[in-house]
Length: 300
Image 1 (cartoon, rainbow, N blue to C red):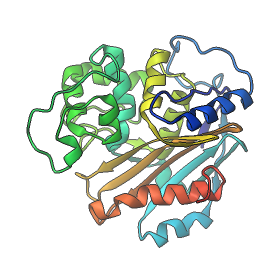
Image 2 (cartoon, one colour):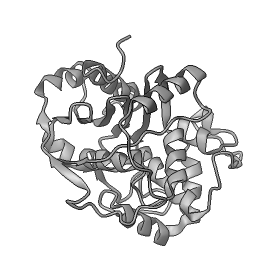
Image 3 (cartoon, rainbow, N blue to C red):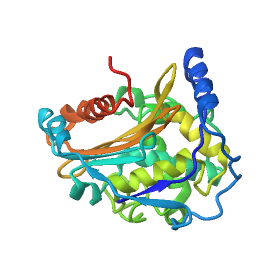
Image 4 (cartoon, rainbow, N blue to C red):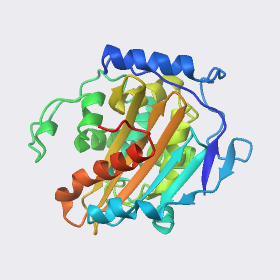
């Protein structure tokens, strides 16, 4: 089961996409149903029956071939608000919690903004000249580049600045997975105690999409802007990858949503990455194929 939100909202991307995509977002806004203005800050992060409608997910065993063709084990949950439908492949795995890895950058950015450690997307984080195996990490960063290139050292710095007490407070405030910040202040989401399920990823993303998390609306909008992967004339894809490279077996994530005029389509996938980096591309490949099959993404 997952939680289905009653309200909806649309957020246009900022300067990171082209004019055609921005125009497409305006079309989405015009086509979307009228909604109330979002409040400046959510009153509570607790899930209650007043806020959500419980919706039973429908199994999709026909999606098995997407995983078998890629030679990986995994699960995916897709919640399509256009049809008020939620589908799942491998229900049992979807309910199990896994290390979030870099998908945690989504809430982590909100924590850092709320605590005042980061002012905006332009603040520069200076590279300490220690070389990393990923070339895009070897240089000064800002929030946009750190999210796009999944730069771990930036978020380890933010974690140390936040400290374990504030990290734990924020995790509990939003009810993120098992809310466990044990295992090291700068690694608890990489190989420490933090765990989250695919269903819980979906529930968190829906709250972010609607600016319903207990953070300032402008911060939630900024994080959604940082999550933009690509956009077309009438759709926007916002997502974040994750790779638990320090786990056995390694786990890979891709979570996010596609915004359409008729409603958003949320997704969360995780897979076992037995071949490590050689399996990394399969995260997006599987999700994109499934999203195309339900007309959430355009067919090439």
